[in-house]
Image 1 (spheres, helix red, strand yellow):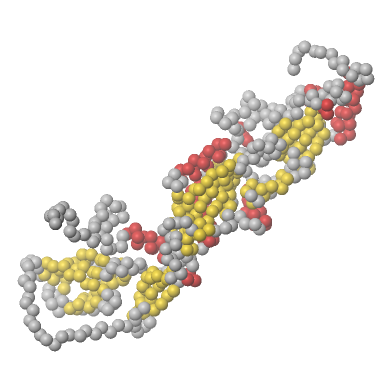
Image 2: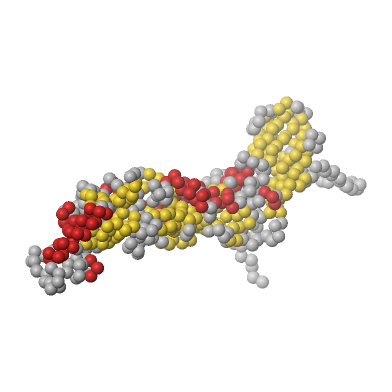
Amino acid sequence: MSDKRVPITRVNKFFGSEDFKLQESLGMEYLHGNLNFTLVLFSVDISKTKTDRVYGEAAPEEIRFYPPVEFKALVNIAGPSNDSYANGIMRYVENGTLTLGVYIKHLKELNIDIKYGDYIGYAETEDMTRYFTVANDGKITSDNAHTIVGYKGFYRTIVCVPTSEDEFNGI
Amino acid sequence: MGKINKKIKKTLNMYPVVSNQPHYPSGYDGRSTPKRRKQLAEFISDDGTFLPKSVLHEDLDLGLLEFVKDRLRITVNGKAISFVDQILTLQRWAEFADTWSFSDKDLNPKIPFLVVVRQPDVQYGTNPALIYTIPDRRTFHYSKVPTWDGQRKGMDLYKIPQPVPIDITYDLKIVCNRMRELNLFNKVIMQTFTSRQAYTFVKGHYIPIVLTNISDESQMSDLEKRKFYSQNYTLQLQGFLIDEEEFIVTPAITRKIALFEVGTKTRKKQMEPVGDNDGNFVENIIFTLATGLSITKTFEYDATIQILELKEIASYTISVNGTNLSNGIEQFYITNGDVVVFTVCCLTVDSGYPKTLVLGTHLA
């Protein structure tokens, strides 16, 4: 992010920063106050994680994390897939992808970032939390869909895929 | 016609001695059954009858599973990698029953693990030792087994057909999350199959397994799916089928009458001079179908008898004038008029060579 700040004047005939903030606050009120989907971010501390010198791989107990942080997001979980490891044998069924819509402002307020490879916990029931790993951190929000009338990007779409217990199973 | 080269060998040694072989410490003489062959025969007939036991598809499958479990199972993070200890079939509940012990909270198999999938089609074998040699399931002599019905001694003839060669192809799969685990497993595989084949042991038979192919089916390219490594090692087991249902047991000779026709013309045969033997000589006692497994001999001299060698004989007992000597005695003393009975037990596998007890006699 550049230190140089540039005023955004596009579409200013009918939409400005005040309108943007209003829309943003309305959306956040709806998402956080009404829907209230809460998730937990386990952000990997890359500097402290022990990795293999050649492959950069780490065993579950070798991965180090920053303190877990709760955050709010719009949650969309795809249908589970019924698949197999060996041509129809060793079948497994697992969650579809977890797609999150999260306000950029919300992440800034929490002083967190969600990056590729981080783990996210979603409490599916009272006694079961499913874990996903971030496959697309959605840091580019330039497309029209992520802006309000083309004014400025205001949310990120984060795609997560299920993770196996051998990789991550909570801390 | 030129002269015959004197260096040309005019006689062939029918019983060459092969030295420097660990299983034949005194050299292989071409006649006695080698120790290793005896050992292999004992493996086959161990804990059973004189006949080999059936070797069928499930025995070969089990042999491969044992091979993978004992020879190829690696350790990851101090724990043996999970292994499905059965051949998985299309029955869904069986698959679950076999994998529940290492399943996660959704009852999916937990990574990493090894699994063996048998390709359902079993092909005619390619093992050159067995392929297309004897047609029509003809049976062949396997062994002769002595019988006793309370009155008569006899023999049963055991015959079996040539085993049927078959090839079974297995896919040995490793599914894991890390390259290090793949490397470890690949190392074990390569070390095991460095001579192209390795062997499993099924009911006394060594069955070769050949590594035919290695392929990768890892889930890596789809960014929005869970990633994992999956590698497939194709193993071909070159086995054979032995079916007890095809064995044949037939009675052989139980009684034999030997008739000799002797000429009436008498002609004195000149005695050949006998060389000095300073009272020592060697005598062979040969057991045939005519003599049975017991021979009685009356000695007409005083001597020390020594058992020098057993040919095609497993064990023997000796009685002198009705008194049994201790089993396996190697030297004993006889006097003029002693009646000695030699009784022997044959080897399980009959090589067809005469069963001979070689006696060394030293006259008193």
